Length: 123
Image (cartoon, rainbow, N blue to C red; front, side, top):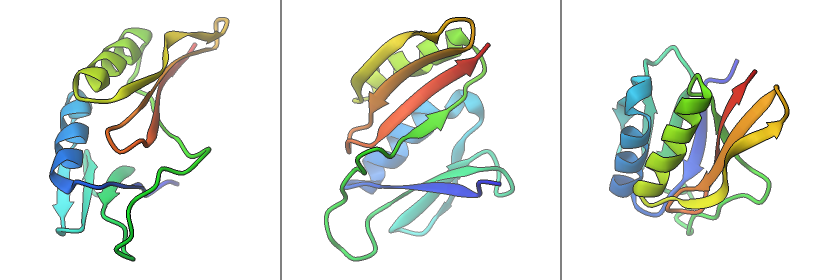
């Protein structure tokens, strides 16, 4: 159902590098780069992440309450993505851990532009 999610960024090259490095083990790469906006994902038929400079030319602002949640496949993968994001310049917004016993394991970061990301695993 989701085609793509767009995050406003201040530096396109830095954002593309951050997300392609962070999501490389999920087979994500820049699929379409149109200068102001770039689409990152596995292929054009799967859900994608787009990073862009805002269309109106104003500075980007992370949305309060907005969050992109990524499901890398296991608790170990949640941990790995959290730590890789930190290494790539993200800031911690909730260390990896069990949030709901036996149901939800998650970790939270803010990317270099302040956009909130969650890495999670059910079960």
